[in-house]
Image 1 (tube, helix red, strand yellow):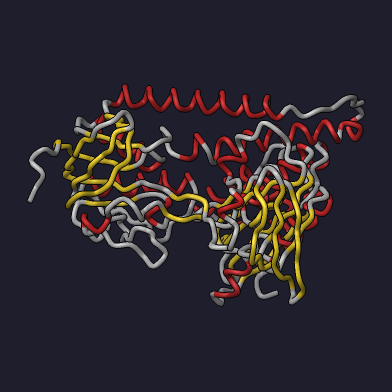
Image 2 (cartoon, rainbow, N blue to C red):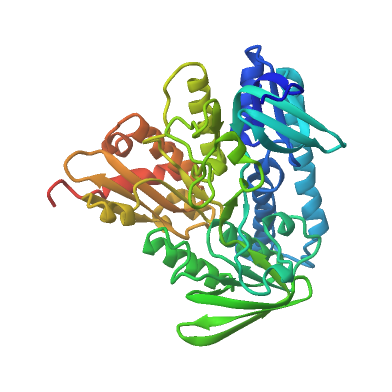
Length: 467
């Protein structure tokens, strides 16, 4: 039976992350009656606890590294000291300014923001347990699920009891951990391991796989491990952790095996960075007729529609690649479909960027993916030491490489591990979107000395067809 107490809305959005807030603001500006239900973080994880706060902290670590390298630039250094409370305060100020901006957008757009925990109680019907007490029930012509993900805590005996840090708590530390154990060498683990090492922590980076960032090409993994070694980060790969003892912020022992031998690692703090789990288990999806995948993500089609009529999902919880820029693109797809169009996610470009120092950026195919799919390619590779801009700023670590189709001059993929990699990648991505041959970039006039100028030298090295 329909809930007679339900408030009727054109659009009900669960979660205020990138895709959800954008569809809410846009729909409200069109004159629709819109409500967004947010459990805790206004604007979602990106401006509060993930992307932007982490890059803020990472930049502080970069500045710290310049102090420690100052002799290289002819500048004397004395009494260098890291004040983590001040680092945290800089981050908090930025977050508050972003939250204020979001609240202003709700006011200007006319979308209603309700703070509380939401769950489905029927088809297109959502009950919110309000943060200030009481409940409200909403029924939408359309409902958007935008609940995101959280850090995965593996069922290793003793791990939960150790109360480990996730990226959320790590970015709120007001002290420098004496010895930080980082469990997981993906994007989050690598970024924060390097940042805390630069702040002065002893850091051990642990991963179950045989190499760092194991989804990337082997030369990338090798370059990342060399970076860690040069910054005195202890790297332990092929590690199977079977038990955790102690408590983070006091002392922690990780017990397990490595290549068949016993492994014991000791530290003061433990950060878990071993993947993400969708926030879908407690929101009553079954009552709405919304199915999930085996891994718990909301099951959607290429139009982002769920298995329930009038219910859609965007962002991480929908199994989209876990980047804010992809959630924003989910909004564009969904906005078009709610307006009667037929936009799909199939075939879209997914830019990858990891904000270690130097950055790792990739667009299109990697060598690993090309080989797995049997796609032939011509390869050009250039060390960053050959890029004039990199020389001038003493940031010559890394390389860039391009994959070019063997029959045409189409760019299949681009990877860069080097300073400014994300910005340079955007130049290549634009050329790929336009369908330009690599020769258009090779023969372009690019300002000197800039990082994108390195693309000219890179693409001059593309082998001739048939070679």
